[in-house]
Image 1 (tube, rainbow, N blue to C red):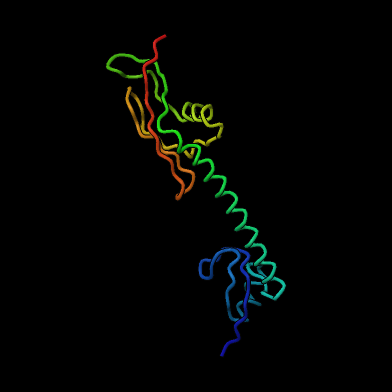
Image 2 (cartoon, rainbow, N blue to C red):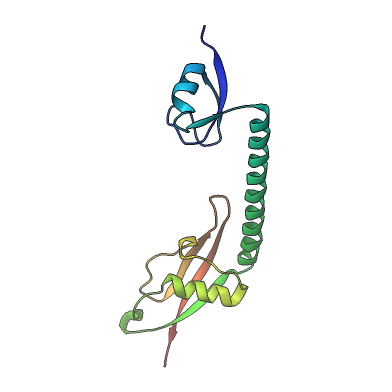
Length: 154
């Protein structure tokens, strides 16, 4: 029977797991391959305690970020519709298109919250009308609102 020892992975390994995973492997595999190549470290009481503390800190940071995103989403949930004025040509076609920068600046002026381009999903807009605008913070936190394109006469 082979002796199994516990190690903490330092790198992602397809057959064992991801960084920080605590796994049991045979002692020969650990001492001859994983540890010399710095793929893993021996799991002692101290290193396991350190690993648990590190995971707790990481989870705490993730919770703080999640709370900030929830607060931002609450601000955006209060907005049901935003309007953007664009120059209009024939057949209610607008000159150019509505882009992410315009939407981000409009939402910033309303809420004071900065968004990134990757958070905003809007369709290709070339005409006047009402469109759906989706703001996605994470897979769990999403906000939908209406985007109204109005004519601008200079």
